[in-house]
Image (cartoon, rainbow, N blue to C red; front, side, top):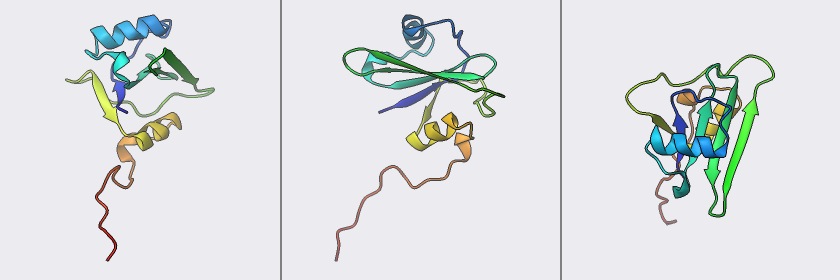
Length: 113
């Protein structure tokens, strides 16, 4: 599954339909393809995750009780940033995914001798 982080903040009054429109218009991506989209509000106190499972959309939200998410990519050339699963987990725990160190997601396994 592809995990895409929307770099620009989004108005969190938007629900599923509004975020689907953001995916299609601003991110040039179709959420029906099965990607998981991560959005932040302007103050970075909350995240929303949009996902399509083949039957309908899931919308999850996490709002911090104190403070704000410390790490977020700066607005640049690309509207999205790809994440690995362990990076998303770290982001949800208010960590810095760019500093995550993990084994490669896939590596060839040598047959036993």
